[in-house]
Length: 138
Image 1: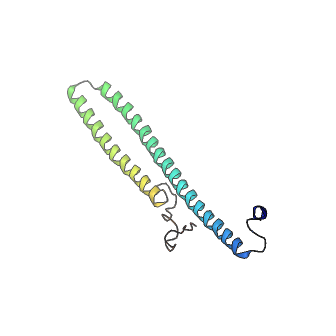
Image 2 (image 1 turned 30 degrees about the horizontal axis):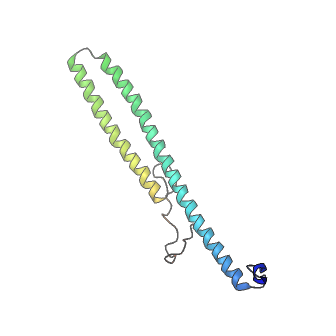
Image 3 (image 1 turned 60 degrees about the vertical axis):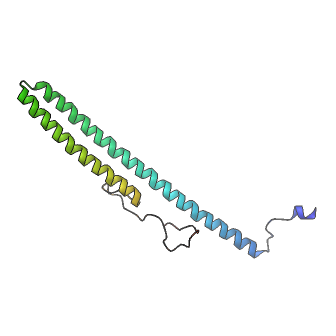
């Protein structure tokens, strides 16, 4: 039973200490990578939903205004012209809105947010890291 009371890392064993230190350093680098990835995902998701909310707010206002204009029409000709203007404006707004959502999504995947002034960082750390080794993210 004397082996049961031995310390796992004797104080004078430099090899064990170096191995344990290396393991902790690799684990810290891996945790940094995870934190960076989740941070990018969170920021990208928030930017996406903010853009979507902004788009819907503008479109709801436009739809409300179009309804008021349609109610004010007095002839079938006015109704047709008003409906055409509404459909054209709505289709342009949806095309622009989808384009902005795609840009926000692409920016999130690239590591930054295009169009909102945030820097577009690199997409994943040190390209020189050996396969299977954690990459150091600055």
